[in-house]
Image 1: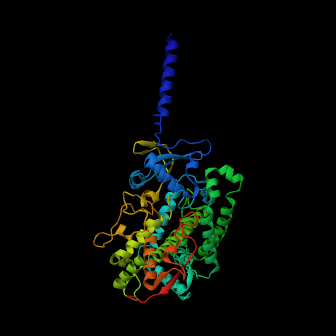
Image 2: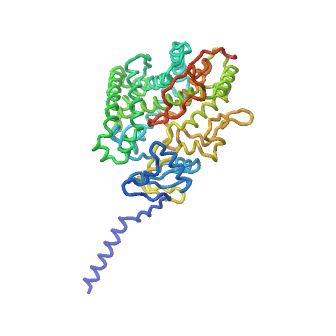
Image 3: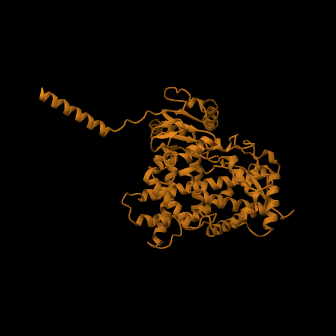
Length: 493
C-alpha cells in the first residue's frame, strides 16, 4: 500500500512539473468576421483581380472596418478606414511590425533587405538606413542643394524640346538621379548607359510585379514554381544585381575603412567591415538593402512627380493658382528652398492632394510578430494583415470630396495649409516609409521649380479633359505612358 501511495505521489509530482513547464495554454484566436471561403480559392472569387483593393473596400461595408478574408488558403485580416488603420499601425506598437513571407520577395531578397525583411535583420537594416540618410544631409541643406542641381539638369532637358511634347517618363530622371547620388555617391548623366539600364530594369520589374501571374505565384508558390511564373521577374532582378555589385565593388575600392560616409554604399561597406557576429551585413544582405533602396527610391518619388505634372495639365486652374503663388513668393528667378514651404501654402496643399488622390501604393502587408489584441479580436502570431492605405486616403468620414482632386482638403477658410491626420501615403507606425523626409523635400523642390518655369499643357490637339488619369498596370499606381508640353512662361503673366 505504501509503495502504491509513493508511486501515486510521484506521478502527481511529474504531472505538476510537466504542467508547469508547459505554462498557461495559449488563448484561442478570435477572428474578425468575413465571407465564407470556398475550397482552394478561399475568397478570391470576390476580389476582381486588378480591382482587388476596391473589392475589399466594398466587403468592409458588409463586414465592418476589420474583417477576415481567405486569399487562397491564407487567412488574412483586412483593415479599412482611418480609425481602424490608425489603431492597428500606431496602437499595436511592435506587434504589427513584421512582414509576412511573400513568395516573390522571399526569392528576390531571401529574407534580407530593408522593406520585406523582419526581426533582427530588418531592425539592423532600418537603423543603418535611417542613420545613413541623416548623415548624408537628408532634410537639410546638403541634399536640398543636390535636388536643385538635378532640377537645373531636368530643366535643360525639357528646354531641349522647345515646348514640343515630351514623354511624361522624362520626369523620372531627376528624382531617380537624386536617389542614385545618395546611394552611390555620384549622379549620372542622363545618357549614361548604366543610368538608362537601371531605370529600364526598374520599370520592367515594377510592371512584372503587378502582373496576375506573379500574384498567382504569391498565392500558390508550388504551382507557380511548377509553371515558372517567377522566372521573368528573377531574370530582371539578376540584371539589376549585376549592376549593383559592380557599383558596390567600385565604391569599395575607393572607400577608406574609417573615412566619412559619402553615400549609402559607404555606410553599408563600413558596417560590413566591423563586427557582425550575427551575420546581419553579409554581402548578400548588403546587395539586398541597396536593391530595395533602388527599387523604392526611384519608383515612388518619380511616379508621384509624373502624377503631379499630369494633374496640373488636367486641372489648368489649379496650375494657374500655384504659379500665381510662386510668382508672389519667389519672383521670376529665385529657385525654391525647403524653408519656402511655409510661404507657399497652396502649392503645398496641391502636392499633398496629389499624393492623397493617387494612392501610389494602396497597401503594404504587415504580419503579427506575437499574439495581438486588435479591438475585440485576438490575432495569432504570424497573421498577415492588410492595412488599406487607399481606404484611409478615400475615407468619406475624413475627406469632404474623397473621389475628386481637391487641394481644399489641405486648406482652412483663410487659405492656410492644414495638416490632416488621415494623410498617410507613407504609412504609419514602426514600418513608416524610411525615405519619407527625403521624398517630401524632393517632391516640393522639383514640383515648385518646374511650375515656376513652365506651363504644363496637353499636346496639341488634345484637351485637358482628355489626359488619361487611369493608372497603368504595375506594382504601384503609376500613370500611363503619355506626353505633355513644358512651355516656358513669363512669371507674373
